[in-house]
Amino acid sequence: MEQSGQKPRIVVIGGGAGGLPLVTRLGRRLGKRGKATVTLVDGSGSHIWKPRFHEVATGAIDADLDAVNYLAHARQNYYRFARGWLSAVDRDAKQVVLAPVTDDQGEEVLPERRLNYDYLVLAIGSLGNDFNTEGVRDHCLFLDSRPQADLFHERFLNHCERANFSDTPVTVAIVGGGATGVELAAEIHHAIAVLKLYGHEQLDRSKLHVHLIEAAPRLLPALQEKLALSAEEELKKLGVQVHTNTLVQRAEADAFLTKDGERIESHLLVWAAGIKAPEILGTLGLETNRINQLVVNDALLTEEPSIFAIGDCCACAMDDGKNVPPRAQSAQQMALHTAANIERLLRGEAVKPFRYRDHGSLVSLSKYSALGNLMGNLRGGSIFVEGWLARFMYIGLYRFHQAALYGWMRTLMLLLAGRFNRLLRPRLKLH
Image (cartoon, rainbow, N blue to C red; front, side):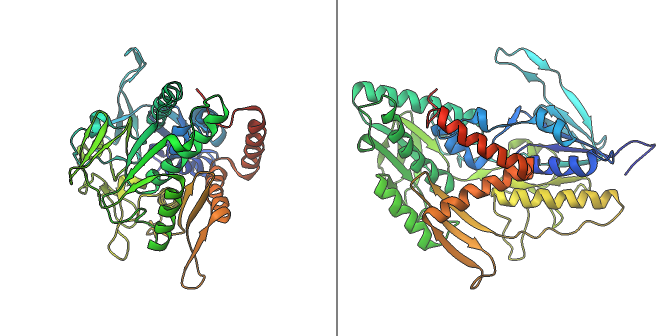
């Protein structure tokens, strides 16, 4: 789609698990060769892999060291970066409208801007779904973004310091028995054990009360029941109080109230139950589903033939009628497929349908264990893994994500740098 000598303009909104690998691939294959102008838009200046937000929240990783700076990454991978949040799409003019960027004092840093596109990819992810539960937005912490994870980290450390000084329990209540809730519950126990080594002598796991609340009959519905029960047993060994078949009806400043009348008190309330797509998608005039995801065809195109949607913000039906699950691996597969389809369109070829390949699910229980199932061609297509092997594979998933962004040589250098950092820095981010 090159007109009057102008390069095709590809704009990607959202630099998450789908958007960042997409612009990386397009930048290396098209931007580097001068075949297209590729622009990434994101309201943040850096990227953290969303499956690691629970580790950012507890301080298990230092997000400042682990983050990918968009400007630096753009320069290395031949695309452009524009900071801003999407506020509208002018489909007739083929422009995206970016809201003004303001600083902490409310002063304008960047004005409203318009970017022209020939192909637009919406990859803006998802948010926690509170299901309109009373009090949740007012009293609960979410883990949808880096600032929210940082906020939890700050409040968690303050809560631990108060509890250590007054010799009182540390209490955290988490709604949502999916991967985020389970991993956060385990990571909190690890954080308490490490804090004891750094001067919090009154703290230990016997004084930690973590409640994990799930409305369904069991945790981790994405995993087979055997694995879900194994995860629940591991959490109970750590001391996590698991509440299944428990529907939260209301959140207050210091407690969740359930439909059965139970009051689960806690100093920190976390909501990690379900997802929905950002509200902005419902204003674009494109078809959305009940949780605001953009409905796409099998090529990940919306009803507008120049607009793709990938990752958690899209609803893509599979052959069995179910939608592709909202996982990081889904977003990454969609990113690579969309990059190939855009290249086909630029060559004047037809797009090809996307086929999701489930490689399995892994859940980390902090340093204590991990478990999951891997999909393949072995014995019917699924094998179960637990313990150190699952933990090794879980870490490996993140290394593959880094390799997609940096290449394997730089990923190995980052791994070595991380090993040296562990020798010099505290085992937990303490500020």
